[in-house]
Length: 192
Image 1 (cartoon, rainbow, N blue to C red):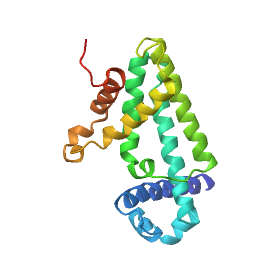
Image 2 (image 1 turned 180 degrees about the vertical axis):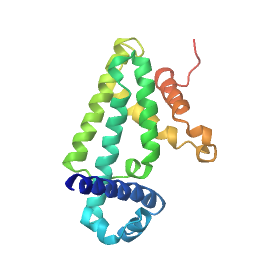
Image 3 (image 1 turned 180 degrees about the horizontal axis):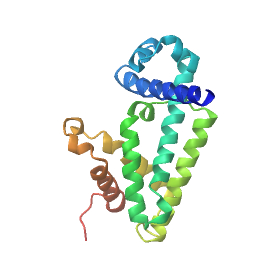
């Protein structure tokens, strides 16, 4: 009985978080009642899981960041050459970022849990960039902190290109990953 209840609670939390992402993306000021309605649950159920709006936003931040970590780990970046790993990680992260646009593009709660997940994401990214530098994809003297910042900016910009929302193929994570990696590694200059 306890397992079924726990599974039911997990499903309702997942439904609430997914509904919150959709609703808040359309109206950042949406009420808990609107989120409950979108999740197909009562407001009381939502408040049972999340005491208030801030608690819900904190849970969104943690969930989205955990999904990024899962996407990175799913790509198994340590088991492939750096270029392949960079492509897999980038495509997987873009899939998550596309699903959680509101949460990942807005200032969300900086709870200790969310901060710890962000530190883990940064560590994974720096490790992958160090491998890329070691395998000659990046210059031997490349500033990895700066490269990480540029990579993160490219990830954000890839999903928000002008007109991309009108062309479904422009949102293909594999095509976007190719664009991000090509820009990161080669810039916009002529190929030699």
